[in-house]
Image (cartoon, rainbow, N blue to C red; front, top):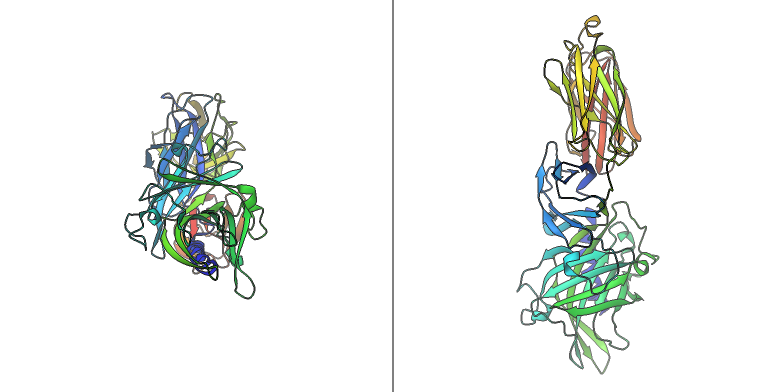
Length: 489
């Protein structure tokens, strides 16, 4: 039995290897509760090719329900579920992507508050649908898989499988058995060629019994098959429920670091037919079906607040030649639902923040036109209590207007070579380019001297970074520009 089972599961894991360390969404953030008893939740898509995700949420002990997400600008999405003070609001996303021709779900896990077994199906996350009739054993509906679900608590991983028969017999005769498995792989530990599986089956002495198994290969490329823990199992409502102890899984020496970089595991379910030769006790394994696979991200996205503390706006500065900046800090971590700078002629200016940690504080900045003599800053984390800060600009006329600095930065950047950035409005002064990760760490810095034109294309030689979101900052004389961008490998 070992070799065909191992090969199948390793093929699954290797097929998902290209998806490691790639989360389609980043920079999750929330407002405070607005006048309609709703909270604004926002996130950024890493790549414009990622489809708009499904948005799911649940309040307190209720089951999951699907909400609506809308597209804002620049790859930012928003969902606005209802909320009452004190509730625990959990939310998650799901989409489907294709890698090497294999369609799979990219999704957040459904976090549960306890280890109840079998769990309520409405508190689990749907992974995907496998169509009827695609089993390699078309006359065996119990081996033809349908929908699959998963859930996670602090202690246990849950898997739920549906098939076309609504029952899950494990024994056909004394020599023929059915096996039902959920495979789990750490995509960042596949160098060890190890996959894990929850196995539901009959107890076949010296062959296999229900449990959590590790499958791999040794140095001589001989398949290994080791039972490392117990599982809970139950057939109810035409579905097979299985659960294993998370510590049995992550405690194994071959599992790799957990949480891993992407905080994700690969899931897929399988069925098999085992025929046993009683004279030799040699098993023959036939593959039945495999389910819609999923890359599951284990971020537990929660919003919970008992009330609202207004944000603090401080350190408003107007600098020479028109740059204005100010500091925003919110004790509840709310982003500013209203963030508008309006100059005296009514023009509204775009502002860029240098990060997303609103609790620690972020700095907003923009460029003020030279003709402006005053501006008003409007800020609110809930759209109800709006702070108004009036700024008097008295120094503009003493300085000549600098050209407006602009740049065209590829987004996303695919790191096949050093990226090129096209600048307009350059002054013949040094140009300083810095790139930061989302922790605020500077990962690239370069100064360009001897600029010969207001418009130039410059290569960021030596820049190299992993997939993710980054902040690009360029300073030329008195002009500063900030851009968010993503890298896809």
